[in-house]
Length: 233
Image 1 (tube, rainbow, N blue to C red):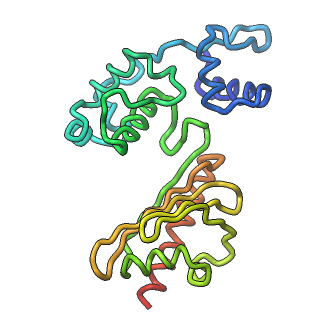
Image 2: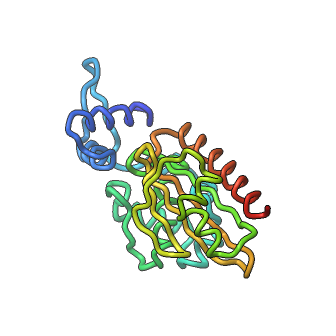
Image 3: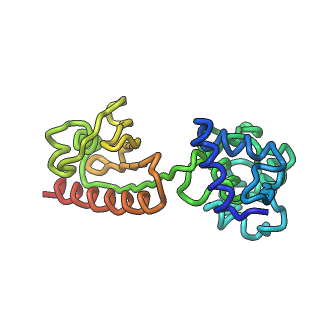
């Protein structure tokens, strides 16, 4: 049985050969008992996850959310979610779909938690094989002013100098979808906290590696700090 690293190498080899996405290549490899031969030796990936590899008392830690929180919002603990999703072989799906009619945000939370528990993605990793990072901050300015700091090029240049980006879509004072200079994607969401306070959450997606995700997390932390100082002054 290959290690997780070996299997990822096989997935990427198939991607190069077939042009499939990471998720599609992985799903196709999982459908076959013998995924390929390497040096004359059959390399296989199990059809089902190793159920005893992770004990239920580790589920919440791996998922990144407590049993109490997920049960309060969805009616199920992580152990119940894992049992139910394993029962319908969700680990073979390209993406875990909503089977229990949870609200959309909690569908995503359950999806990410289950995939982390079953080793389908690392923390910060997307099912495509790429990575994402996020940073949020409450800033000392009105919602409209914080939004303008992101949306208006002249104001944005004061705290994001040299950042080549394109705004793909915008909902004023609520959301911005941005294509970054390297082709990655940035989403920024805005909420009001008070007359002179607003919260911004930045999510940077489709990064090539964990190192890139860590680097961009530091970048956004630094830049939001600069923005805070600018708004204060």
